[in-house]
Image 1 (cartoon, rainbow, N blue to C red):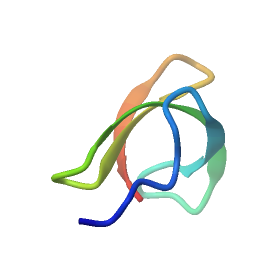
Image 2 (cartoon, rainbow, N blue to C red):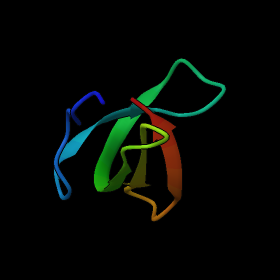
Image 3 (cartoon, rainbow, N blue to C red):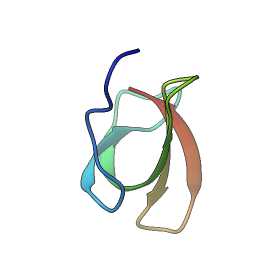
Length: 51
């Protein structure tokens, strides 16, 4: 199983789905089975993003 790259609470740049634009996001959690990160954008939007 691949190890996670980002820690909970870490602020990184995440791509907005369907766009080529990247924004700062906070890592909220990581699902090792699906390799999805739950992130929160500065505007409060929460999404799941692939690594």
